[in-house]
Image (cartoon, rainbow, N blue to C red):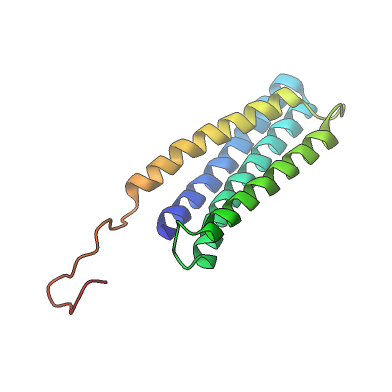
Length: 144
């Protein structure tokens, strides 16, 4: 699972940076400086959250010693999800009503990064060379 997550993390980071640039430019053209800030913050926050998801899976896999059915695995992943929820609520409360921030551009950037990362996760899963069977190859003494 680690190669897929690393690949998804790399694709997601590149995509989040690209969306930050595009959302910043579009936000600036649509709403001036508040749009630029909203686009950059939206893409950055969504990119950080997507990275935290992949990192939490990698950490959970190590803590649970590769057993993705372990309660420890799910505890780490759910803990990271709750942390992201709390951070998102705090950021939203802090940004609410600020004159230098455009919430619509922020929302648009978050939605684009999230949908794009879902597509890129599927691409990473498709392109990753991860064996799904465990067989002994000629010249090996047993299965892995």
